[in-house]
Image (cartoon, rainbow, N blue to C red; front, side, top):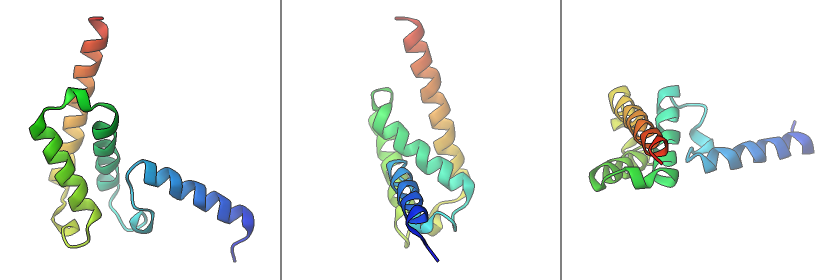
Length: 102
């Protein structure tokens, strides 16, 4: 039985998950690596877009599309998630280098 406090906490959690680009209804059933890659891809496209080239942007958008749509969700595997997370590390290094030269 849900009371008002639980409802508020759940809605706040769902709101935070949506800001991370994660679908709250499929949150429990997804692999942790997929969730990390999905959040990282949304972060890259939102906050670190200036460090990405057009090919990387297109790839991240395709990854997010594949994760969010049930028909293409099956094609998302651990290797693809590792590619996204490695791209995130590469962009972090690029951003830190740019900050240190300023």
